View 1 (cartoon, rainbow, N blue to C red):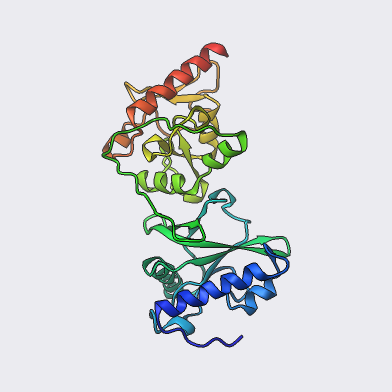
View 2: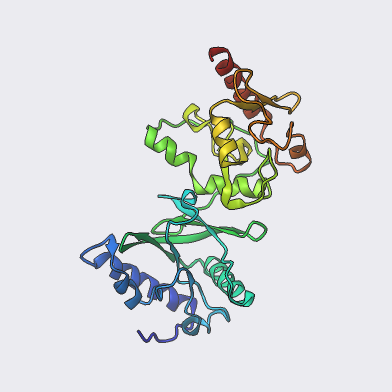
Amino acid sequence: MFALPRTTPEEELLWREAVWADLQAHPSWPLLPPSFIRDLGLYAGQAGIYRNAEVTKSICETGVAVSVSHSGKHYDDDIDQDGIIYHYPTTKRHPSHDAGEVASVKKAGELQIPIFVILHKGDDREVRRAWVSDFDDVNRIFLFEFAIKKPQFVQIEIDKPFAAKSIRNLTIDQIIRVERNPRFKFEVIKRHQGKCAVTGLSVVEMLDGAHVVPVAQGGSDDPRNGLLLSASHHRAFDKHLWSINPKTLEIVASPKGPTLKAMKFERDSVRHLVEKQSLPHSEALEIRYKMFEKAAKAA
């Protein structure tokens, strides 16, 4: 489908507003046939970032990202109904191509222009309207947040008073959703510099943002209530198989459970997090350790 060049951010925004209206007007909305999305100019059927640089090169040399495609085959835990952590492209194409795609997404964020996140739902596609909330070049990830209008992003200030718990009454389904909140995980990844706190594993795709004070106990989404852990160590943490002594910062295994060696720990303390300024708040560690001690006595 031939598209006329869009030469200003205002023209680009108007085009995206019109496309969003067309998507919602389709009789099968919210599930859409891929051919319809392609005909609208949202993507060309490929995975990853779509920018159609020729149409928007007057706005930016690299073009402005139009959409990202998420198949769900990889990094499924990075997405929920509020947003998605999207990993930078790393392909076998020329590195400058990937760099151009990354720059085009950043440009959409800079210009406060929404992008479209295309989710694979079997043979159909679901399209979400999203905003580039943040990015992390070190760990090569974007944070997209789903909303009709650009949300007011509130960055938690680390030097502000800490609240280990927040007031919220949640159902079990809501608790699971909050535990997987992409914003919380994104902030914890940045705070821990993309490394598991107890093993040093630095494959971001294999790491979880774990709440120290659990969401089910009212734990807050303050990143100081977070630990970056491998999926297996996160599960063991939630099962109270291990915890952190808030006074010594030593990692302690449950006396009635497997040893740290058996659980493949690479460290016996988290003192290194002090230097990196990523140690969870002492109040959160104290609450969690009391929960751990209570669980050990009950076992």
